[in-house]
Amino acid sequence: MTQYTDYKCFSRFCEYDHHTSIYVYKCDEYDEDKDYYREKKLYNIDISPYHYEKGGGYNWKKIKDVEFSSNMVSITPLYRDDFIDDDCEPIGIE
Image 1 (cartoon, rainbow, N blue to C red):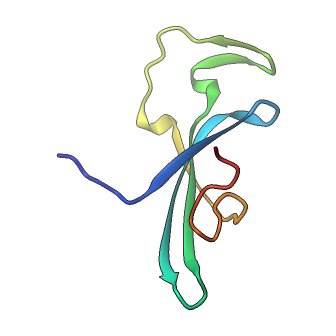
Image 2 (cartoon, rainbow, N blue to C red; image 1 turned 90 degrees about the vertical axis):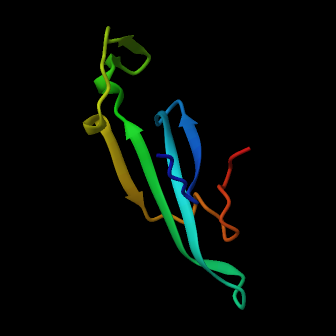
């Protein structure tokens, strides 16, 4: 069974901060009088590299034969306006 959602997503990579992860977002309740969305929902979806790599900094090595499972996935709600603008578009994503 296929399920559809109206959530959108984007990814960000910062080589000095963390590895690549995905952000999932949705904006609800558009206020035409004020020309912005009243509620922005933003989540960071990630799998820690420690599940599939060993090391740190610039010295990482893949762990052989890793089997991924759903308990490796972290979903973190974010409360930030610097990722999604007032038009419900990602900021700084090209």
